[in-house]
Image (cartoon, rainbow, N blue to C red; front, side, top):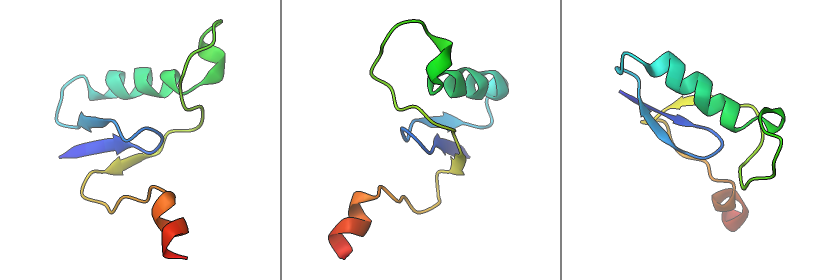
Length: 65
């Protein structure tokens, strides 16, 4: 099964033997304090979502209203 990052929708295969390390490194990417330089990244706390869950991009909710 695949899981995706709640911040950037990047997909990961959770059957990968290195998935815990990949998730940890990806979570670090979304932390502001991990680099001393500016970069184009969404900062926040990652929530891992099963890929078969419905996607909520936020903009869809605004359009429906």
